[in-house]
Length: 422
Image (cartoon, rainbow, N blue to C red; front, side):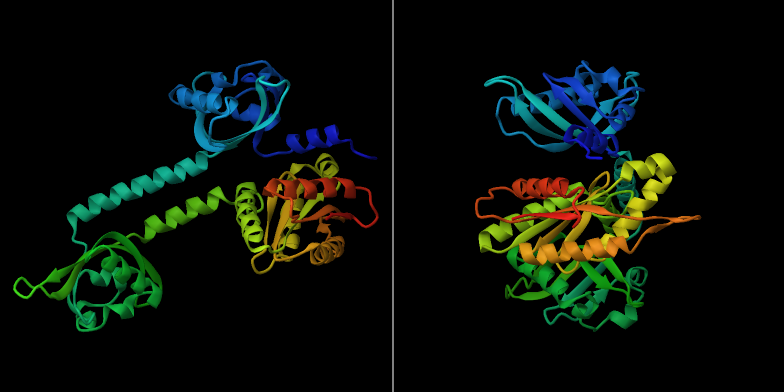
């Protein structure tokens, strides 16, 4: 059975984990089930005709309205940003990541039709709150205990180090005195960065971060303030004095936040935001260097049928299994991730259409041999695959992506299982 484009579109948005909506003149004309759940509405149809601004938290409404006006009047406006929405009950508020794009204008000068994505970032906000709490606790602790204080001669050897350095690095004060401070940095480049900062800032640095190596070989992040001490009579530099504090926990939380924002929660793969950022970077690099760039757009065939027959738990397991199989084909600078629903994307810098088509054939052959095992039986996998490569006339990465999507759609039902749009 051939799936029509409208039907395929509805299948896609209905399976999205993120909320998806379309508005015209600020009013909903379409919303998927995930959007309705986020806004506390049982049936998506109950959103139709309602003013989208009614669901923006009062504290954010003026800002979001201003962004909306800027966009429809052609002024610069952010495409995606964080805000808060208010549920239909008028009380519950949820932190969300909002991305809005203009679809069309029905007539010249008319109001545009907008499509948007809502992503629940309450877990992300919780981590931010934890990070803020950690920073507050760190400040309180530091008010009641000394940071590590150090001094080196101009030869870089430690002439003073406070005793609590043992808590930071595991070395005793006696072990470190007289030794080169350079030996405790994680890499020579870390030390060079600090020295360069002191030089560029005329002998004084504030909150410069670096990685040191503990006695047990593990890394520790520090934030240091330091200055070059000058001899009062000769005016020559005689030492470097500074204070260092452990910020490892803070850095771990920041890295966890960054990973969460760029990772698909179901598969652990790079998500749409990460893929679009990477594609944007490689597109402009390829354009500037006249290099090659290709994408492979993939869609799991009959995924809805799997969900209907086996349930969403098996469907989720299928997506995770497919993600593991496909990710093994990405190497080097290549990136593979989940766009949305059952759609995945390879970004292939440096590869032209021939090499990308060969990779697509390898992927199809591998997937065909790697069914999802069940307690009784298995689920055979097949893909619709589209391959597209950079053209001279491409002015944005979205044209490359659109051709890959078109090729993938055309590949459904083909014996080869893939389509190439050069």
